[in-house]
Length: 164
Image (tube, rainbow, N blue to C red; front, side):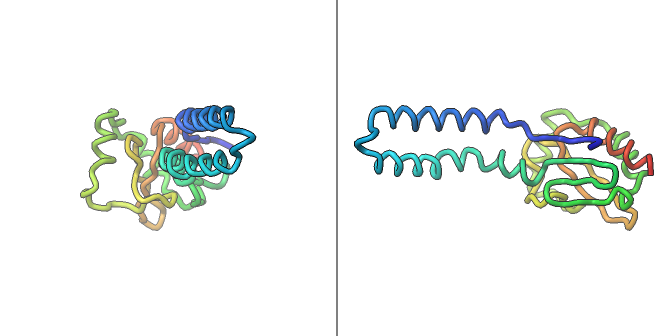
């Protein structure tokens, strides 16, 4: 594994701990007499509170996780052979200026922007606050990849593609 960009799991851990503490506190006062009611409320809080609060972090985990190995760039569910990427496009993207945090948020919030490249990974759009990198393949197809650490991603990808 040459590079792996994981999505932070802090929010997921906090909400899971809060859910478990709440369910345990409810259970301490009602178990074993009201086990049916406790199970029903546990399921209701899971579906109506925990899942909506964690839908975005979970989708980022599935659609925006990046891995680079010796042969493949994997973004979410998609696999792109490194041999298909244009090294000049990777190096050109690495020379671009790194956007600031407000610029990243403004870009990811702009839903009226023209679609310039296909978003890799299977998500609907670049998640709010994440940076995006546009790369080209040897066939001329433009690909947008959402990343948390643009510099580290492009450095690792440049080394992997440059070795080809």
